[in-house]
Image (tube, rainbow, N blue to C red):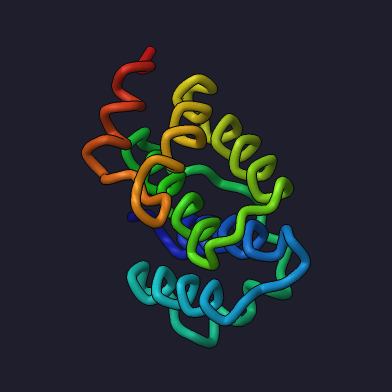
Length: 133
């Protein structure tokens, strides 16, 4: 994973997704905090990201972009409530990350047929591989 700027950008887009329905639930905050910890971002730095406007800086490699897309899907579903604004945000961000629009749509559709709306990682990669340019 890249430097602090890339890590902060990844967390920032997740925070914006959590805020898209105008409420960050505790379960969403805990999920975000666990991602920050996995990325090696301190709790103090993590908390400042809620106040900052960080430029979107998508991951360099496609695999990392798919992982980030998976984090977005997981965060959206962690509270078991999906808002239309969250779907719009994820769709837009997936395209801004350079992911294939048809793969994005298939993931958003297929997630409903999996327990807790979590697509297994190997299936997720398979979907994106199908639409690889």
